[in-house]
Amino acid sequence: MKEVEIKAKLRDKDTVVKKLELLGCVFESSLRQEDIVYAENVGSLEAFRSNKVFLRIRVKNGTEILFTLKKRMANDLDAIEHEVVINSKEEMEQALFLMDYKEAIRVVKTRIVTHHNGCEICIDEVENLGSFIEMEKLAEEGDSEKIQEDLFRFFESVGIKKEDRVFSGYDILMMQKENP
Image (cartoon, rainbow, N blue to C red; front, side, top):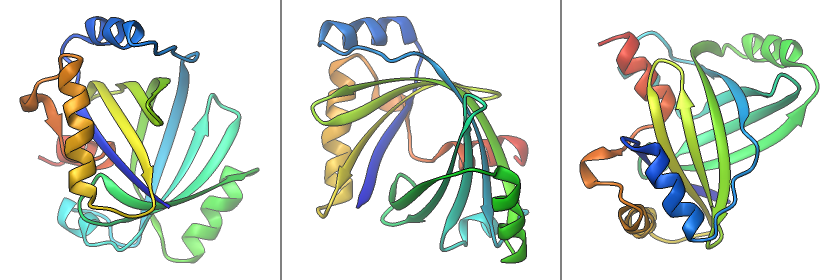
């Protein structure tokens, strides 16, 4: 399964949330996600981007722990993803270190989630980055860039402008901010 997503900076979060609610979207309770991304090549942004796969340990609300592998495909927001629940962040991290993976970046965010037309929509407050909206669609096949353009047309319908579109994940955005 392939995860195709789009992302945009939110200038007016309240207005976008209200427009989504008018479309029938119901938001779940907010949750806190603490992500640590691991890679074989770390240090510079160029080294980080050279990795074939990226591994992540996510702790949700301090209790649920997920391990995720992502392999980027056509662009930063198009990836093959596999995810499993684990019971020990520390044990998983030690296993990654034994496989020569290193911690690359940490991302902490508060997220509220809703769904629309079979897609997941997330409103995120990312520490040190600001407010964002994401929309994800799981796809078997198809042109990822066309899917992303279709999803962005929906964003425009709720008031998000093209100039606010973001083409990288939070890991890349955080690395760019920390290492200008």
